[in-house]
Length: 146
Image 1 (tube, rainbow, N blue to C red):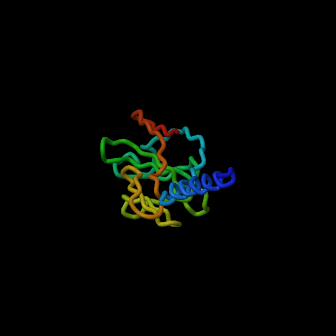
Image 2 (cartoon, rainbow, N blue to C red):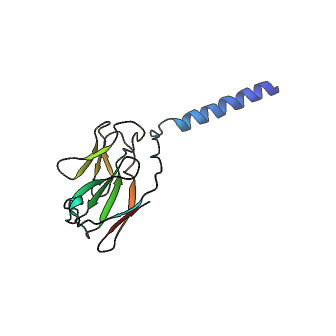
Image 3 (cartoon, rainbow, N blue to C red):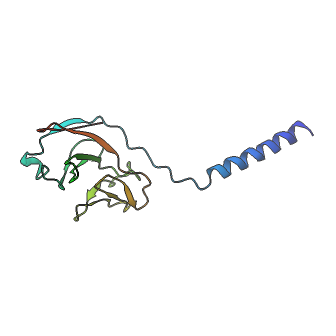
């Protein structure tokens, strides 16, 4: 066998392996751009509504497209989620909102839905959970950072 036939056979084998390996993979989503986050708020302040009451939430500026802060009813901890939809964060209009039932976070652009309790995805085209920021409540101030 000459070298050209061997190269052709190897090319066909590797092309087949590559094609088979790429079939059936889940959609790749854009990464949410990294924006430095490091701020504190007083959840008892009137500026943040009733955030000091478990089960309530508020929007704050920061992150890439804003942040949703949620005061959980479990252990009274606070969660902070990026408002950019993980399905297509670079798309204009992909900012997340909390639905009226206060349990679901939704992207009005792609219809992906996430649980406010932990940011996990449960419906829609998104394949990732919400981007979450670190929180620490010292008794007076809630610190949010990445």
